[in-house]
Amino acid sequence: MSERTTVEDLKLQGATGNLRRALKREQAEGGPPPLSIEAQSELQKLDALIAQALKNCKRGATFRKKPNPAFRQLESLMRCRAQLTRGQKTNAKKSVADVLAEADRLLGGVN
Image 1 (cartoon, rainbow, N blue to C red):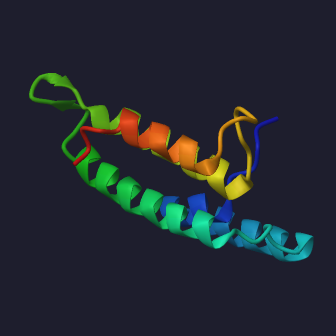
Image 2 (cartoon, one colour; image 1 turned 45 degrees about the vertical axis):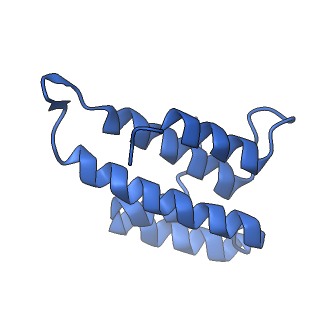
Image 3 (cartoon, helix red, strand yellow; image 1 turned 45 degrees about the horizontal axis):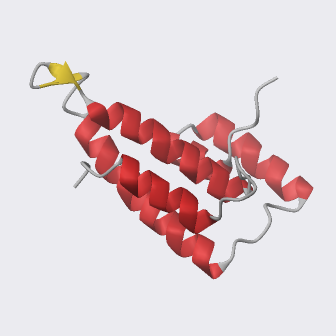
């Protein structure tokens, strides 16, 4: 069984029916755990990078006769965002700063 999509992801996707159900479920469960101020600022940075990657995805699957790297970058950003909002860590030794630094290293060509 797959994990439930977060409300933030549903808002980004524009899924209205699923969003309504998720909001009802979240209210019944008491909502997500509160994020720290540091995590909120990192989340805002990730949202800006996701918006930029989405803008670059509009160019199509290929760009200059090569696969468009924006799709891979968008996938990585969405995974980082999901881990940050759920509070999951793939490796217990990595902090949020380490995960975001790794994402910045991987996405160095986005700018």
